[in-house]
Length: 239
Image 1 (spheres, helix red, strand yellow):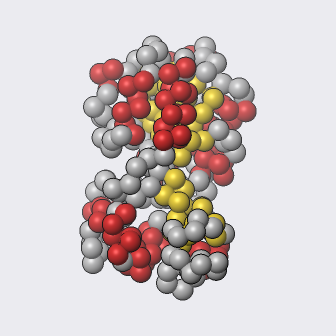
Image 2: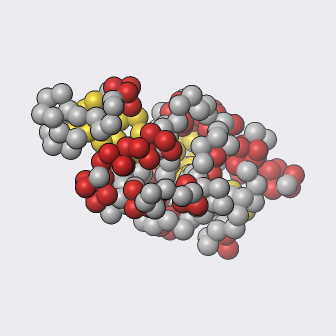
């Protein structure tokens, strides 16, 4: 991997408008399971399939069962940012990294110090009432017995995450496209690039410094200028 790391260092050193696009693999080194690996959430057994539980229609008809799964598997507790999160935050402070675009909902990029973070799938750290929109503090929502209810109208409170069957936020997508289009270097890490529409964002990059860092091959490897099939935290610890 030494030659690939040296090339990545040179590419970063000679770039001033870097954008990072990341997926679940960025957080697995912090102890957060992904969804599609052998040990991922989709491989585990529940009363209902996890993909069904994490759909908008399931939440609406069975919020009790949704919250059982949510509190068991999607809250992150005292999980800490790893070397990838920390180095990306450093690159932003150095003026090189302009944005982090993430498919993750765990907030670890912000915890590491990143300021310009676009959360394609929302975040587990915000909650709001589905009836009146009033926000509820994260600690209060997580401490509720069963389904949290709005103190103003009694409506069901939900985490501000994009569930299956729901649309991504148009303004977040537009901002992500803008950052990627203007980037002189795009680093894509910890994602299989199989989940759309998020994976399609890579097509907006027209530069010549496309880096893919993922333990497994992706459908876009042939388009990349550099491919590193290693853990992303181990890679960023060396750059």
